[in-house]
Image (cartoon, rainbow, N blue to C red):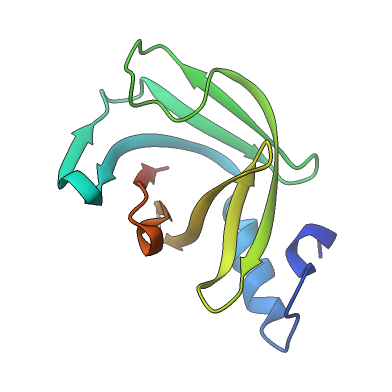
Length: 126
């Protein structure tokens, strides 16, 4: 198990967390961003923004062919970690020291949400 997965609150659910995080590996296409505070959802052009996670290096490669202001990260390689936000979620994505929110993976859909503080909700598909 990656050491970044067990920073706090390690428990018997560690195997579940490791399994969930392992599905983060690979290429994800950003499809929409919702800003709950202003009740607005922005759809991203198909395939114009992708994040490719490499768990072995704890890096995410962002590829953007869009000049869209909604893109949360610039193109390039970024370090990431998975942490726990106590009382909020088991897995939270931090990229370059910035917490992007709780992550959940359901089949081929990745949701990164900071809605617990009226932050953005990012939806990706494989």
